Length: 150
Image (cartoon, rainbow, N blue to C red; front, side):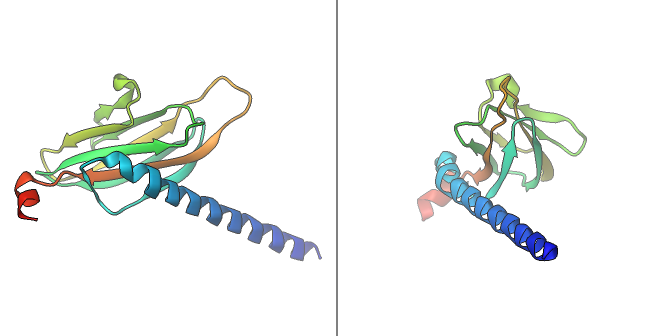
């Protein structure tokens, strides 16, 4: 009987986690994608549930000659998101702390390289800890010549 209760509890947790992940994916698709503006979405929906104080990292390859927009979306109840773009040497290329915790940044890379997007939900001085969906989407600017041909 105890084993059956454990199995039911485990299945419940798995189903709840799946439902939360689906909601977070939907949030990224419906809210995050619009924030890319005229940039063309790269097709990947990177989203997870984070709590205050938690960190997440995302590794992504960026190609020389392309202009990119990184856009982070979060649920309204979460405190600000601190994010950095870091190269393989550990050098910080962008830190949104220096830009009033802006949730988007447009940039180009001088050479094709893998960069790390490091995010942390800042902590508030409150008793209750808030958790919620955080999505990171990337867009590529279409070249003006290609826009005219289409």
